[in-house]
Length: 61
Image (cartoon, rainbow, N blue to C red; front, side, top):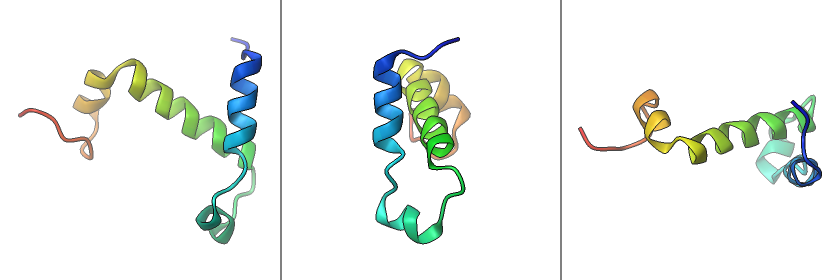
């Protein structure tokens, strides 16, 4: 599945490491950015599914 130009822009922007990420180090900021954005997109696309799967996301009992 190919990425859209907008996806490449989002990845490039997110690949600019935050200060705490610079301090911790990153071998591949672009791959790290892709993983973070993929996870974020999944949570946005299926909030109920990710809420059920996550022990860190509060939700109704």
